[in-house]
Length: 467
Image (cartoon, rainbow, N blue to C red):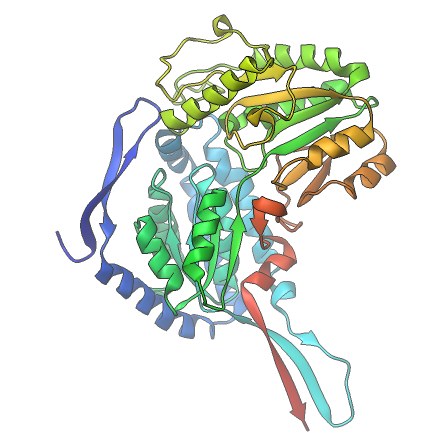
């Protein structure tokens, strides 16, 4: 084995059939040192390249992804289990939308900030790149989340060291191929196969200027610990338990259609997926009945089949965790609306899990308070707006929350009181690149996307010139 790799092997087990999909050696200490040295040296030159040239490179890289969307989609299906009818759209829709938007706003977002003239002085503020940006990516939407940081970091004049999740290692290969084809200078983008200790070592290295991490709360805490006494910032997008509130005046059909999709798309493994729903008591029974009927139209099965709409979870342990949450809730009095005969039967130790809808739930149950990240949702009736607000805020997380109503003024009034990073009205489980993507409480800190997202990837430098 050459000095690029450690003797330790990282394996990717496909949730499709439990087979070994891929294995590769961890990057060696020499390879990590080489990557950091090259990224540091390359960034000093890359920052001097014009923004127009940087944008052109990123557009060419995007073109690579769009050309290979079907292949990338098939790889994703085998790596993490999302049905192949959907995986190419991670590239064609969300990835492309975010990449194009961040390219298009780069001139404005990175422009100098002019200060009103003063006699004998010229003053302005420049946005300068930070240096080496370390991106630690998740497996659930590995391209969608990574593009939030990778493209803007490179556009801003930084270099990027990228660590793909163990479940989706081919994402690093695809980013590298895209940027190589686009003509990005060698060293500006590097990807490595790393374990937790190696990640901590890179975070603690003085050459790392910023960390963009998407993952669990425990992972975010580990990132903070690795930073230690260093004066750098980490952008942390962590857990979620996103709520929805359906008011009495909601368009019931629209609310059901979108909330079922928001709960079960990607087998519920979405950062901003719907995990708990509060419905005004006057329409509760109608909502629940319609929600169950639509859920029954999903097709659970092999994700390589174009007809499948619900594939396996990422690994058997994730499904086992969700099943335990459901079991605990039922033991405490919850009622399951989906029975075993509604969906094909799979072994209890498999990654395949049928969707589940629970009623008679309350906040003593972990399924209503702790992240499930699974095709499971609890639905509670509420008396009024005040009770809905209290329950939505009764969580240690705060990524997104949604309200379903015809009353915009009520939506705004209630939104001001809900503790969340994004407040939706009559939509959910969507990320608009023009808006700041951020969270509160244990969901983390920092911002990606929008003009504000560039602020995390640059530092201000003031110019005060006496003429």
